[in-house]
Amino acid sequence: MQYSASSYVALRDTGDKFFYVKKQSIALVVALVGMVCMRNIRLQWLQKFSWVLLVFSCVLLALVFVPGLGVEKYGATRWLNLGFTTFQPSELAKFAVAIFIASRMSNKSAISFKTMLSSLAAIGVVCVLIMLEPNMSITMCVGLVGVIMLFVGGAKLKHFIMLVLPAVVLVVVMILTEPYRLKRLVAFLDPWASPLGEGYQLIQSYYALGGGGFFGVGLFNSRQKYLFLPFAESDFIFAIIGEELGWVGCVLVLMIFCTVIVCGVRIAVQAERRFDTYLSLGVVSVIAVQTLLNIAVVTGSIPPTGLPLPFVSFGGSSLVVFMSAVGLLLNVARHSQPTKFAHKMY
Image (tube, rainbow, N blue to C red; front, side):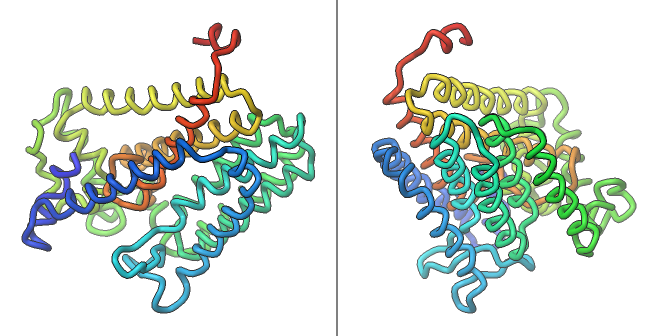
């Protein structure tokens, strides 16, 4: 699907229709190395130095604003120039927050207000840095993952209301006060009001999904990838899947993601240590939330945001970080033993 979605754009821009596939293949090799490394790392070290990873992620997020280091694309500064390639720190920051929260929650049998406050502070700092890039979609992802983890960890409802509600109000204010975000919201409500403007991408996504029908137009036969649908190889690759493989292909992809998520939850249930359980739930939450947000955008269920489909969309940073996170799941599974509770569940 990566080849199909990117081949025409790659041929036009570089003269090599395999350009994006080659870059993603290199990232895949690095990602496999990262997955193996995370599978064998000592999770006790990860728990002990989770705050170091969080601080490191925040430093990387701040460095994107340094002239010469930050790379600006499409009006946003989200990438670091490493010389030989670029890296998107926000991809790492999502999991750094999840690991930090897992470490904080594992220290006590019940989540205290202090633990919740420190976790929300970490979420807030990372979200502010990501919003400054700007990147509303990953900000939403980080916030939702944090809320899910705290809820699963047993945070009290009154603490949620006291701390989360103001954050929700702040997000609404930020959307209403930023012109481009407000335009996206209006385009989501009625994309045909600006078919050549803010509503263009969503309309083309509709055409791709609708044109695919039940069985699709056939692999490699997409029409929307011929410069009609922007970012077909990255944020909107699910629309190309729907066009070429149809409703059946979309369901198959969703079933694969559901299998990954269910396996991740099962690993969390069977984990021997509290930190391992929360760590697994954090990784699964990031995968689930980002997948749902991406598909919701492509299908017009929420306003358009730039968020890749995990493991599928073009993007080396995303692939390396997500596969490394899967390595953590494998690490937890390697040290776990099936429990009676797990057997009852599955």
